[in-house]
Amino acid sequence: MSRLPFYLIVGLLMLLGIGTSLHRHIQMEVPWTPGEQRQVWEVEAIVDFTALGDPARVELALPSHQRGYRILTENTASPGYGLSFLQDESGRRAQWATRRATGSQQLYYSVRLLVTDDQRKRQIARPPLRDVSWERPYDTAAAQVIERAWMRSADPYTFTRELIRDFSDELQGENARLLLTQFERTPLLVRLLNQAGVHAQEVSGLLLEDGRRRQTLTSWIMVFEDEENWALFDPRTAEQGQPDNLLLWEAGGRAVLEVQGGTNSRVTFSMLSRSQPAAAAVRSQLADDTLLNFSIHSLPLEEQALFQTILLIPIGALVVVFLRILVGIKTSGTFMPVLIALAFIQTTLPTGLIGFLLVVSVGLVIRNYLSYLNLLLVARVSAVIITVIAIISIFSVLSYRFGLNAGLTITFFPMIILAWTIERMSILWEEEGPKQVLIQGGGSLITAVLAYLAMNNPWIRHITFNFLGVQLIIMALILLLGNYTGYRLLELRRFKPVTED
Image (cartoon, rainbow, N blue to C red; front, side):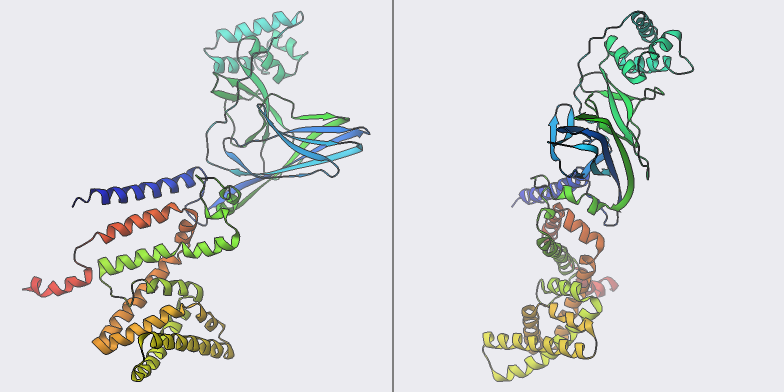
């Protein structure tokens, strides 16, 4: 029979598991390691203005997801104002409105931004060319400035650099000085670029510096090479490119702040940088209920805590499969060690080992007595279950009386599994002797300890909880191990005399 379908299924599981895990790491920025830290900026904007006693409406441009930054949370404080968030082709805006406002007014907007490695450019619609008209003698000066920069350039970007340099203090000519007496530098440069047929607009950005207060936005020039490609230019230095600490606050060519019904308006910014665990920083995004973001984080916290333990079971199953198929360790029951390992996670390893040995040892003694009563199987197992519960209860009470609070955690042991383990070991003792009991009991304990060490590893707990695709990879590995038909490692000792001969 062809094994091709089997290997196709295994390969598909591997690809799906690796693909979904990489998607969550790259797209959702879920970290591979539990202790990874991420930088988060907290930016607060304060809008101040003097109301005239009439209805007031305030619009403030808001930042969007962009290269290097992702918005985590937003908050506002505006007592007495109605608040709406608007979205159009120019970007996002917050609009406050009230029927009556008098005197000094303050409105607050704060945003938490996650610093990301995403270097993809934000898609921004190219603005149309504006009609430019000049009065004399500014028309002649503008034409000469454009012609001089045009001759020393080859494309919109190089033309913009040369044009900005002509307005620098070192290279400033008479035409440039004449134009600067009438116009502000950044709007002037945008007008000259539009006159030369270059699509450009003025945008506003915030330079992020830790601990700064009462900062204002700086003006930048966004130049479009075509409908999709654009670049930022510093109108003061002609440097091309977006600095790493520049947050584009308004990129639609509109005013950052618009106030109706008030005067003396301004907006200032304060900022603070913090480091926090990456899992906590991206938690709000992980909870988004989308198909590609299939995540346990979308469940309530109580269910999340439950699944954090359940998702460790495949790891224990993989350990059991490896030890039984490849190594050849015998266990009492197939997956009993996995459940014992889960109990060890709750009780800690030393307490769990002591409790397990005590319960099984006492249970075997009592089960040996029950064998003389010649009970039926169901009644005998039920009696063993009640005995296990009694043993655990007695040990818990005694440990509490002696001040050993760790002994109380023995209640986390799976009582039904312990009862069946005692029953199976007792039958094995009667049929094959104490040696096989020690071999299978010791193998079960060793397997449970190794499964516990794997399941309790912080990195494995983080990976299994945050990357559900890992479950598919584990299944593929188990299927491959299940296809193994060779010798086990512990069986090789049988052939040692042959090699010696």
